[in-house]
Length: 279
Image 1: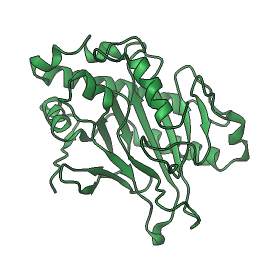
Image 2 (image 1 turned 135 degrees about the vertical axis):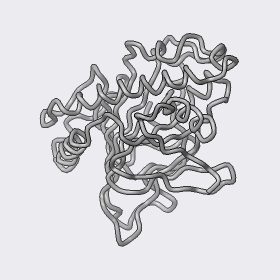
Image 3 (image 1 turned 120 degrees about the vertical axis):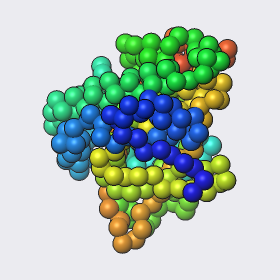
């Protein structure tokens, strides 16, 4: 394996240094023994399984301007791809809509993931070299302070029917738009990352871990010091053709935060939403 993604104990005294090192070298890190309750994660998954299997899901169709709500199957494509991803999903913002059947646990998870993500940003800030932190327009944690753009995306990848478009997969190769992504383990395997030699490598789906990766915005504010690593979700093997559920939290700066001389967080987000077919 040529991509050494570190698995780090959240409570290790050197966790912050190891996390920043893994992010710099690979764009990814895996955290075990984290503070997010596995019971809470499982309960949220169960609620959303019921939602995606209900006919009422279409009542919450997404708002193209606000970008909250339900996005039907075959809505999104990866940047540069014409094939639509084999998934449906729901966008949750702190201010956004929730289906009536969804209880308070989802927003509890949103809050807990946002808090732990803020900790991860502080680890990066603390351990990044001075020449990198000097590039930041403001400290990383301050970029997300009172942000209205932090996004919890609940994703359902349905079982394959056999009639899918050739070359379509659950999530085509892409890089994330945001600063940092925090992903509790998916319900089934499938996540892969692309190493520097062009090989696809599986990422842990241990239910007691969370996977973190740096996005394009962290790459931009650090002038490419932290990579935004390409990843994808592949289709299941025929003997395990099951639904897959996933819950990434995408950490976004406030719209006015300056990323570099060309973009604010808001202007870059709008450009990318158009590229992936959501605008």
